[in-house]
Each structure stands twice: as C-alpha cells, then as structure tokens.
Image (tube, rainbow, N blue to C red; front, side):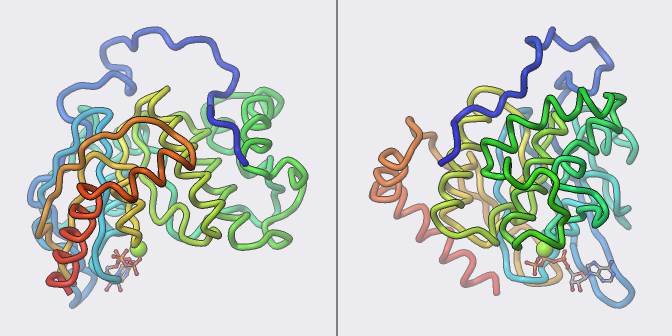
Length: 278
Ligand SMILES: Nc1ncnc2c1ncn2[C@@H]1O[C@H](COP(=O)(O)OP(=O)(O)OP(=O)(O)O)[C@@H](O)[C@H]1O
Ligand SMILES: [Mg+2]
C-alpha cells in the first residue's frame, strides 16, 4: 500500500561536524539508575539501558509499568528523580530534546491545523518556511495514504488516520533518535504491517537510534534488534532478548519471518518473561 522509501527530497547529508547533534558520540541512548515517582506512585525504579547509535530497542511491559514515562524522560520532557540519561552525548534535557523525535502515545495534533500543517510543525520549528516544510512532507502524505486529507483537521480524521499523521510528523522531523510510543496500536492489521515494513525499510536506508514501546511482541521482534521486558509497576527491566536480523521486506519476507521456528521461540520467550513480569 505504501511505497518503501521515506526519504523526503533532500541532498545527501554531509558527515556531521563534532558537536552536531546528529554525530554519534558514545552510546545512542543510555540510562543509568533512572527512577521516577509521581506522588506516592513509583512509576520507574532504577532503569539501566544502553542502546548503541542506530540500535533499535523494543520495550514491552504490562500497562502502567512506566514505558511512556521512560520515553518522556529520555527526550527530556519529564525529569527523573534519580539517575542519569545520555542521548548521543547530551546529558542535559534541552540537548536530549534536540536529538529526539518523540511520538507520544496520545497524538498531540493541533486541532486548528490541517494534516499537512500539523505534519510540518517540527520542520517549521527547525527554521524551514511553510513552503519548504510542505515540500518535504507532501511525499510522505502520499506514502501514508493521507494525500487526500491534507487540509482535514484532526477532528475530521479517524483514530488510525490521526496516528499516521502523528507518526509521519515524527519521522519527518528528521532527528537521529526516534522515540515511538505505540506508533501503530490504532491501525488495522494490514495498514500496521505496511507501516512496520515501511519503517524497517526506512531505517535500513537511513539508520537511526530507535526506542519503540509496544504491546505487540511480534512488532517489537520484527522491528528491533533487542527487546527488553519491564516488570509491573514500579517498572524495572527484568529481561533482555537479542534479536538476530533478517533479510528482505514485504509481505513474503514478513510471513517467512513469522513462521521461522527461531522467531517463534524468541516470541515465546518474551511472552513468558511478560507473563512472569505481571
Ligand atoms: N504525569 C503523571 N502524573 C501522575 N502519575 C503519572 C503521570 N504519568 C504517569 N503516571 C503514572 O505512572 C505510572 C506509569 O505510567 P506510564 O504512562 O508510564 O505507563 P505505561 O507503561 O506507558 O502504560 P500503558 O501501557 O498503559 O501506556 C502509572 O501508574 C501512571 O498512572
Ligand atoms: Mg504508555
């Protein structure tokens, strides 16, 4: 349904200069002893995580275990009560925010802006004119099946369409770190598979560091090279599973992967960890 490649029409990027937020320095994303309380509730208790530059980490865990809080702390929008967080060499919250494109669990689309105008917000914030930003975003509208709805306001869209706009806006922001919170949860299974495949192909073409939160274990294993399981609140990392890469894209490669006994064994192992994490 969607074309494979994302790439908005931009010139090939030169090697980032030292100090440039796009230049990998040390780990991609690193958390050491990160904890967060909300009043009496301990949402996250002592999380340690390390994602190499251009690594893709999947995070699964029971509802309420602190997954969204973790993403919000990584990008600097929520301050941890303890521990340190480093994103591509930045330990301060503004530096981390500059390096991350965050797709929140609930889309934060501006109700008074249409689809195109919502999708180009990060590029406008980076200093592009509306015209330039629109030129970069339009090809993605087409690829995500939203071209006919460019001027529709969020209230005129279905939940799945809003989620696609939010996802589009996140990848169009062109940041080196993608934090995706249940990016495809509201989509029908065919559209979800298409977008997963599109994301995989996009990351193969233009690698980025990804932290993907999902309730779908197969999704985590299809898209990520490592999957961690969090325990029920207070959230801790209780298991970590390395995922061997697989070749090919498209429905046939996906079907083969899902039927692969090694993949099934991995999935069962993550599900068993999840079961005991509740
Ligand atoms: N801003 C907040 N103020 C108070 N409590 C909060 C806040 N944000 C999160 N919490 C609490 O922290 C805990 C973890 O919430 P979080 O949204 O991170 O969980 P989650 O793992 O993302 O859950 P889900 O899978 O349902 O999305 C929950 O108990 C939630 O009520
Ligand atoms: Mg959440």
